[in-house]
Image (cartoon, rainbow, N blue to C red; front, side, top):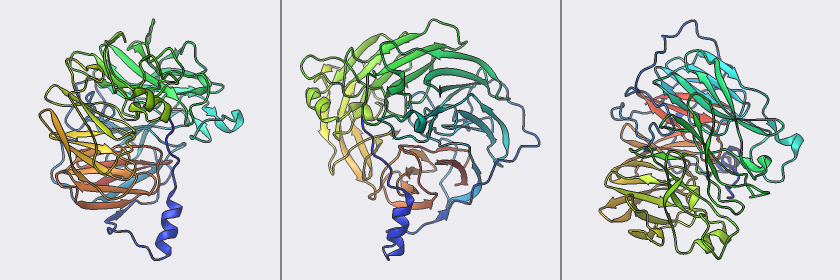
Length: 468
C-alpha cells in the first residue's frame, strides 16, 4: 500500500516558464482564498430524505457512482467563492440543504453556505496527531493527521459522522449536529492486535442499517503491525461495535478513498490490499462482500494474488464499482479489470471476465459510473471502460495527467489532477477536453463534488466553488 508523493504545482509552472505551454488552454482560474466570514443567517436545516441537490456521502450515494443529476449541460466554470481552511483537505465536500460540509487534517469540520461561502459553523474536535513530533517512519501526510476520511451525513437525523485521529494516537467516530455543528457523541474506535500509530483511516464513512462504518489500512510505506479493518458503530454511538479484519496476517489494508459500497440489501462491498502471505490464501487482494454485522459472506481474488502481494500491486487501491446489471467491476494497481457476478463473486479466480486495460493503468482512487461507462482513475490518464453484457473494453483515454477520483456533472467527467493542479472537464462520451481549470495542487486522490450547477473543489488548505 504505497501511494505516490505529489510533484507539486511549482514544477509545472517552471515548465511553463521555459516555453512548454499546456496542451489545452485554461478556461478558468480559481480566485485567491480568504479566511471564512461568518454568515449573518442561514435557512433552517430539517431532518428529511436526501434531495436532488444533496450530496450527503462520498460520490453522492451508497453506490459511490459519483453522478450529479441536477445540472444541465455544463458551461465554462465561473469562480463563485473561495475560503481558506485550517488544515489540509483529503475529504470530498458534502452538500445537504444548501450547506457544504468539509473536514480537515486539523480535526475541524466546517459548514459553509453553498451559494456564498460564508461560514455557518466550525467545530474543532480536538488536537490532531503531530507527525513531526512523533517522527513516523512511514507517512506522507504532514505536519498533522486529523480527519482524512470523507465524513457522511444522515439527512434523516441531521447527523454528520466523522472519523477523527488525535494526539498521541487514538481514533474516534464523532457525531455532530448538521444544523449547529454541536457534538452529539464521541465513540472510541479500537483496532485489536494492531499498532494504532501505523493505522490510517482513508476510506469514506459509509452509512447503512443503523450503523456508520469506518475503514482502516496502513500509512504510505507499509510500516509496522497494521491490519485492514472495517468497524461498524451504531448510529447512536452506543456499543458494541462490529468488526471485519481482512487477514490474520499483517497488512491487508482497506484503503480505497471511496469507502465501502452499500448494496441494496444493506451488505457492503470492499476491496483489500497486499499482505505478506504468499502460500495459503488469506483474504488479501480481494473484493469482499460483508454482511451488516461485518461477516465475510463472499469474495473474489485473482489467481495471481501471491504475485500481487509480493509486488505491492493492491487490488485494494480502488473500490469496487456496482453495475446496474448484477455485475461488479474491479481494478487495482496492476491495471487488470475484472467483471464479477454480484450474486456469486467467485472466490479465487472466479471472475466472469478479465482483461488488462489497454494502454496501461496503475489505478488508485475511486471510479465514477454512468452506464455503460466506468471512469477509472489511472496514474497517467482517466480511462473510460465500456461494459457490455459480460465483457468490457476501453472506450477512451484522457490526456496525460495524474487522475484523482472523477465525478460526472453536466454531461462532463470532472477530474482533479492533484499533482498538476488542474481540474479537467472531459466529454463523458468521447473524452474530448471541454474545460481546464487551474486551482493548484491538492492532496492524494482527492475528489470534488457537484450540486445545483456548482462544482466544489478541495485544494490543499482551500475550498473553491465554481458555477458550471
